[in-house]
Length: 217
Length: 217
Image 1 (cartoon, one colour):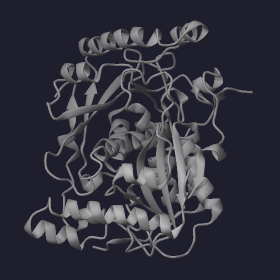
Image 2 (image 1 turned 45 degrees about the vertical axis):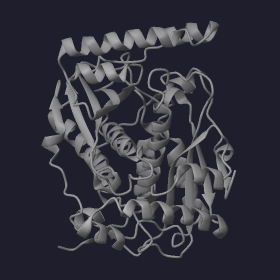
Image 3 (image 1 turned 180 degrees about the vertical axis):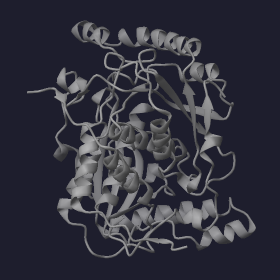
């Protein structure tokens, strides 16, 4: 078998990749449609995930596809508790705005996916000085999924306002696993052109020149 | 301004995205060419980065472009120290194989980029229950860069066998910052069809069916 790839991409292909990236949004419950996501599309999204880079080729990712309503209710309960605690950290007008935002789509989305890091429990090449790179491999898989979902016109939203230890218990994950992210997926009524928090001026977009340093800070 | 995107992607466009993903490789010093990466290409890679998702639209990423040889020497010294410590964790034939692998391209690549997480130091929407999602936002940016680099036929390699605290000091990063990853970028003599560690049978590819669970483990 030939081990070298002859694939060279053209600028138009890089431009299409950018188009997918800039059109990818975090989608919440106010935009999901009930229409189920076809198994064939779910397979494509998961295939994108497992083609992400992973430290030492450890592939430390595991995916729990959550459709059961009782389980989702338990996840939603954790969201409600954590969201109440979060709300009081924002003050005055910001708190009012926070409370008006829809920040998850646990029930509205036809599919939820919990993504775990599964620890190898032996030395992994490349993970010996910065153990967190195992978790980071899982995040690379998540970003691949998010882009593939968007290219299939499927919305994906990250629900981070949950207690990761409780969610791990609810999903009966092995002790050595760590929840990296919990996601809602489904077709959407629309994709916004810009991030909703940018449209609402919750935060402003940073200038790229402020973020780049040469040789040292 | 219209806030809704009308962009729908076709299956062929999703297929191209997958093609970029499966052809992306971790590139090390044995494959980099000296040929410099054009500024225009670096801009495209960094633009992909800042179009990644970030928790609460916090955009907590900062990029240090390292070309200076003395600075690279200090990074390389940290790699050498950490790599020596790592080597002894692998035994017998595995250690011999470990020692034969080229695991960085700090000098061979025309460009190094250190990527930091810059802490917001105030509550961030979505980051209140799982503070690590700030770091994960930076990893999403890294994966965008890796894909864009590949689409531009530029190799990128992650150097994780370094002391992140030392690298932070070498690059004079602010106290509140955390090194997420250190990368080598450049044109390459070739891209392998499969991950090198898969070709060498250092680790085997996992079956996707082993990684997927329904509702709970």
